[in-house]
Every structure is written in C-alpha cells, then in structure tokens.
Image (cartoon, rainbow, N blue to C red; front, side, top):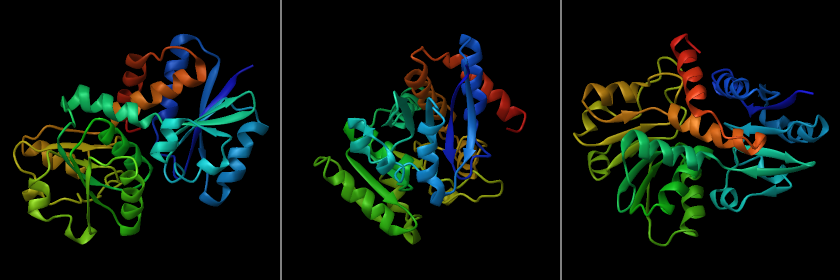
Length: 282
C-alpha cells in the first residue's frame, strides 16, 4: 500500500517539494507519494489530527504554520524545541514527532554555496518567521558575533530576540525598526545580508534593500527559491556573491526524506528535478 507524505502550508502553489521528493522516491523505488495540502491557519489543528486518522507517514510544514503547529504534536525534538519552530513531522506508531531540518539545509548551503563560516561575523537578517528562527539558531550554534534583525511587524522580531537571548549570551542582538532597514551603517557593519521573508516570491516584488547599500564584499543569501528575486538580481549585477534558497530547500527536504523513509536521500536526483521544474516555470 502506498505511503503518503506531504506539505501543510498556506499557500502551497509555489512549492517544489512534491516535485523533488517524488523524484527521490521514484529513484529509490520507494512506495511513497508526496502531496501538497493547502491548510488555512484556522484549520491547522484538524489537519494535524488528520495525519493520525489517515495514517499519513509524515508532513513538511511551511508558512505560516511552523510555530503554530508545535502545540498539536505529541513530541518535539530537542533541537526543534530550542529553535521554536517545526518544519517536519513524523508519524511514529501513531505519535507525531516534530523536527526542524531547516538548520541543516541552511548551514549546508552557507558552506557549499558561499563558503561562509559565521563564527565571529555580523549578520543582517530580514524576517522573524519560522525560517528566521531556524537561521538564527544555526548562526548562534556556529558562534556568530552579532545579528541585526528587521521585521514588519516589529513585535515578531522582539519575540524572536527574547527567545534566543535565553539560548546565547555571546551573540549580540540588535533590533532595527523596519523603516530604518536601509540605514547605510547597518548594512556596512554586516558581513552577510539574509532575506528570510517571503518578499521576492511573487513576480514584481521589489527588494527590501536599496541597491546603493550593497557594498563590495557583502554576501547575500535569499531564502526565496522559486525565482531570482530583485535582491539577488541587484546583488549579482554588482558582482556580489549571492545565492537563492534552492540548495537550502533541497537539503532540508533530504533530511525529511530520510526521517520518513529510513533511506539515504538521492540529493543529485532531487536537485535536478527541482532545477528542471524551475526552468519550465514551476
């Protein structure tokens, strides 16, 4: 009997997860199918209950559910608990266990694509949602010196900073109001600029950061993966080393794949399927 895994999010139409996960399952001859589920926030609890009712093997969790899903699970991994966000659920004998694989995906991409070691560095971070929690956790575990955080609404950034100040006494957190995000000194004092918002996902989205502030040597990481964002286009035009979120997506998905199936994920096959889908317009 075919085993079902999938994605809970709202919206989910842009997601490449079903394409590359199903390519991985086919490559290994596994009897799994990955399905996208559009789940409105008020329906999240019922959707999670449905995992047990329908005996679904597991689920990925994306915007806007990564933090909100946690109270509905039976168990949460120690790392996901520290992060404060879950992006993967495994139904183990009727018990729903929450994990966070975004940390692995992010750090792998930083290492492979940007050759960047966060230790002792300063980071300018746009966003304070679920993926920003995973990124902040990843950075502090690698010894980052300072994280400047910008988000609209401001209270979300305040909540994130409160959460991680308890975990790290060494990292300096700097909260900046959204209206001041284009302050030159803030950017110039940073080694890397990370967009952890969904801005750039939709055609026509303008960059949150002005072109003139992207100084030579600044690294740029944009978690958006479904297209080249205005931020990435500008950074590359100026000759900066800049990457999108595709490699992060593939590597976080590979860990989920392994949690559900117990098999080593065929990452090359998964990446090729995702790249081909992007070339064909999703």
